[in-house]
Length: 612
Image 1: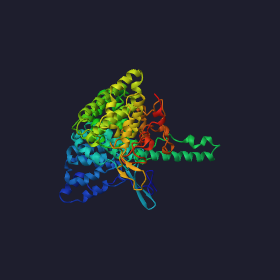
Image 2 (image 1 turned 90 degrees about the horizontal axis):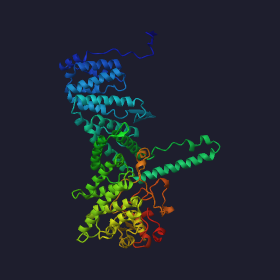
Image 3 (image 1 turned 180 degrees about the vertical axis):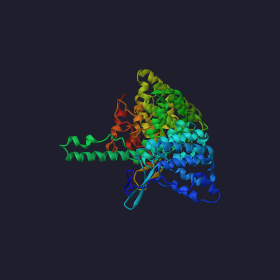
Image 4 (image 1 turned 30 degrees about the horizontal axis):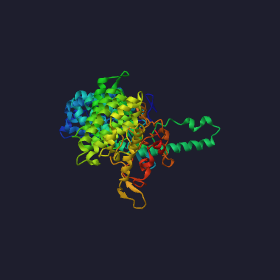
């Protein structure tokens, strides 16, 4: 049987029938105590198969009586807010946006529910998948309509903001509460972060708070994925892939066109799950920074300055106090690469934190670490800026020595002199990376400048900074300064090793002792960047470690790690020694000062014994 060209028996009925009266009459009956039509309306609005024409009809009636929809009718409003309007026809979307505008204008009590409804759509919807007898709930990452859905959400949010100027005050807590858990899928986190950054464009008052929220969540991921763990997982995956490729080649020697070697992707996806999520979020954030600072491909100085101020505030509040983060701090590194003035402003900011006596010592030490790592690793930083920073740091160290070296506190104590030691290590680390640039052009002038720093006084002072600095830094600094006859550090290093006392003796006996090889709990915030996708932003502006041209620093094979050595930073190997490392050595042994823990980053014996 067919009716008007439609198969009547095999097709569902067209939903053009409505039960009950209109919304205005239903509300009037509810006031008189008759709730039958009221419940009927809620039931019809909850129909999952509701049609576009029905949604439009209902919304038009709600708009007419929106002033009557007070707090007593919140259940009905919540049902309306759950209507599936996103992805519908343009007529439905426009009618729904008009309803939202009228609702928040007439009944501000519903502002929070409206905002919550919009923000809840900033990430892919959850779908239920049944595998066997188990229901699995997951996000619908493959929805092709997501861009259109997000556009409609932002359109709704902008309308609400236009009609309720105080929206920003209520929106920020909702954005924070709705932030997906860090274990959610990479696509879910990417969509939510992208949408938050879009909000910051048309609600600029919230930009700093939004950036702080995003960066705080990224730091949670960052500290959950230690550098050593990422390197181990990625190296293992690379070896497995290489082994699989070799096995395949053994059986496909005549099928070169189908060889896995030729079809392997560029490997831009991280194997470590936390690192992959962080990589995606960093890519979104760095792209946002670039887009916000550039207009038609050219740098907009005023916009860049405004964004810099917001990001530095976030840096001070959440990044600087976070110990051992590996990647998140690179957002400020990337921003500073846009203009030399930004880099100099950031270094000046760190310098003020370091020398500020009212700052907590731990933050002063962190500022020193950032300062040294930034000067060493920022390829866009000219030598004149590096020397200007050294001209601030080194005289400050000499003044500190003047005030402490002859008093009752003139002894090596990290608790008393932590910022001083951190500043010393910052200077040593910077010179290790930048001494070649300082000396190139005019060796005589470069040596005169380095000699004018009077590094010998710093090394020989009673505070004994070489005893506290990382062994890898100490050994490389000693090798370089000896080469150029600036300081002879090995007498001090040998004396420190003779006085090295065990913290806890090994329970298994023998000569193995536990020693704290990182008493400052140092980490270099701009150590090599490991994330693959976002690393494309960092690679062109990053200074990798280059061994001195007249020596080759070798790592014993038994200590070499499984990863590709060509991609590692050869100075510290991207790794800072942990606080309690076990060292199989006797204090005062001959070569204990020649090798740092794990024999990483130390100059070879042949280099130290060669004539000059």
